[in-house]
Amino acid sequence: MAETATTTEECMANEIKGETWEVIQYLAMALKADNEGKTEVAQTLRSIAMDEAQHGSRFKYLAGNIGDLRSEIEKMLSGENQAVDGKHEGMKVADEAGKKEIASFFDTAAHDEARHAAMLQNLLDRYF
Ligand SMILES: [Fe+2]
Ligand SMILES: [Fe+2]
Image 1 (cartoon, rainbow, N blue to C red):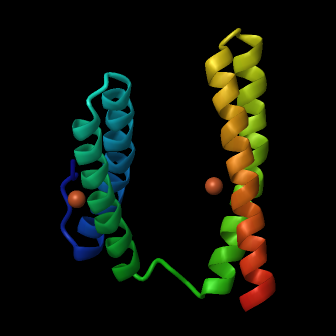
Image 2 (image 1 turned 90 degrees about the vertical axis):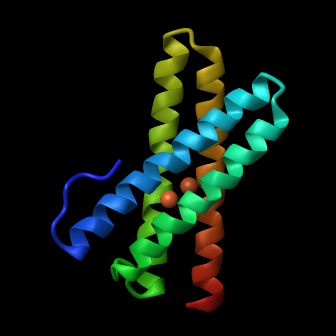
């Protein structure tokens, strides 16, 4: 997956990108395997996805990309709130196109994003 890189920082940046993509890819493959009744295939793919997530996150941490926790959490909170709006927009577009299953998942995911925002706010209130 990696592009050509000459510095450690470039190598790590490529890894973060590649591993991020792999997490989504493996988890999406696992959903397909689930839907085909291939439970052990799904479990194995999910296990690999978690390893890739660990790789990507460790490289991101080692690259010094994570600042002080309070500002990182505030940044993520703002992103989660924007994600609620983005998901609602997606829901509207999909609904208008008659894509009911996709619209429904946008709705579910919007609720997840709102929950993430509430969880982060709770952390800010209690620990920071
Ligand atoms: Fe990996
Ligand atoms: Fe989220």
